[in-house]
Length: 145
Image (cartoon, rainbow, N blue to C red):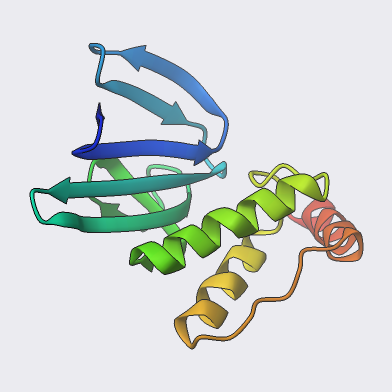
């Protein structure tokens, strides 16, 4: 949903498998199970920003336990959740840094998003995502069923 300057909800990264446009301000995206994506929400009123949030989620199979997220059906596994514009902006900068390092944020290890969430929750600097970390993730992923 997008209403310039009032309500903005967008996908920062991810690979939808279906994109259905409802009207000029709304569309519905569908993600494959196990895919990772970022959902950003921002809202303001006459007094300024009233909501800014970023969720990085993993889409799940129908039988997996999931968390309900506003404006998402049915929900997903929360890897990272930050509220407040300074933290949201910092996460967006981290996503940019991951892309500049040559990685697609949808392909990096889900544990790295959890790491970022945990570190930012206690006002600590998260570690960078490196080629070595990514190589370990790819090796681990190859062993998963």
